[in-house]
Image (cartoon, rainbow, N blue to C red; front, top):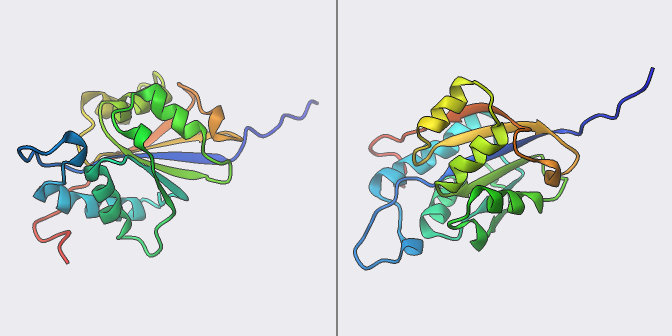
Length: 184
């Protein structure tokens, strides 16, 4: 009998699209802040991640203001937020660029959170999950709205081993806050 090597530890890539942003006149796209609904939904996303036991070991966040605010409000819902790296490459990135950034993550990180933008995040989720005929995948294909969370699981020794079609989309959440949420 030939012994086979284990494929590597279970890893999770948690993809969070920034919360709803506003469109103020004269403000560059990169500097657009969250809208009132986004200010409610971002903390709800943080609570949903905690309730789903999907707290990351590391977060990679776009440098755009709306993504940074989403991260700050979501991670404030946890006892001790993980380290975060604000990476300008995530702003406006397509799926292949996002995957390139993920490939640079240390093997010690088992759960990685990616906070960014569409259409790149949606493309990444669809590419990594492959052609699985799953309701969650159909949901992402239909729409990956603001504050949406997709959790992808896979076994691998290093993050650079993650390639299209190798992950399982385990859940899709679209948390929404209520009036009065997100205010201190």
